[in-house]
Length: 375
Image 1 (cartoon, one colour):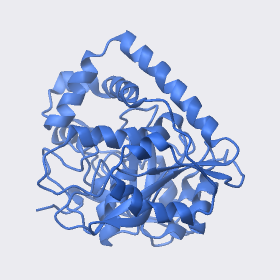
Image 2 (cartoon, helix red, strand yellow):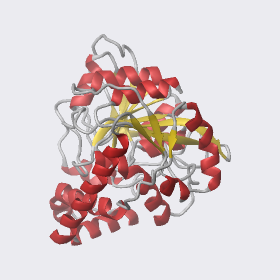
Image 3 (spheres, one colour):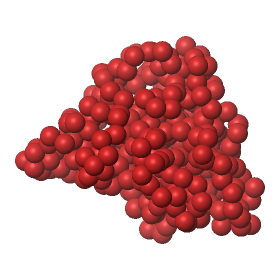
């Protein structure tokens, strides 16, 4: 049985302004600071060893100034280092759209709050898909901005080269208004010219997933190019992510010896054991893949991918390392290239939601949101 999406220590208060988000309720992932409310980062030991923040994270402050009202802090996976939507200490948030199934992670609580109707906006973070996967599983929009266009101040880091705060919403118009509030300058302009549908990545999926998503690709109204991505980067990405996660949290882990669930514990053990040579080679591979993606997106290209390899798994299904790997193969591309990505709810598989992710060139967030509206 799933738990409530809000953590019990996370009731929010404080004044909001008057603006384009007046009265909109926002569910805030528990790695994002809200003044006067503890930040637990999905782990009781973190909650015990960190002071209550005295001010809002930059993203919360902006949303408040625009009139939005934070309603509470929401559950997340331990230190946000998982895509499963489970937590060794606090339990699992049940998917309100697909009862008996997970929401996905690590921003599970914020996605569930929005999908279930207790908030209009969800504030989460996305390092390797932690907004796009829950959005896909719960049938809502999940937006990952261009890296560096939205401030990360006041947010517990995981892998800073890839971390970015982002948003959930059921309504695309509301999502676009909220994105405009959060985005700093530097946005690009230009019309989409083609849909890049990498044949190698799509070929690894179940044909049923491809068939469920195909009508949405047609609705883009763009010429389809099935150019293979041609660069396997998943392992390199996970190495760089792990190295940065250990740099962010290794000292705290060594000092406090927190207990983690099996998957998170294994990832941190791997992170601790990495050599400098491994990390250097991985960063080189990641940089090469990022260059490849930027070429695909140059001149109006839109990279089109499933948001996840399938629909939400059952609550009682054991963790599946192969599924995690298949998911990261899809989701890491936006993270390593710093490009904006939007998971659009477009289909169903066995009665459960499926999302399609669209990616545009770095800085072209507004183009991305406009394209989704035209669908």
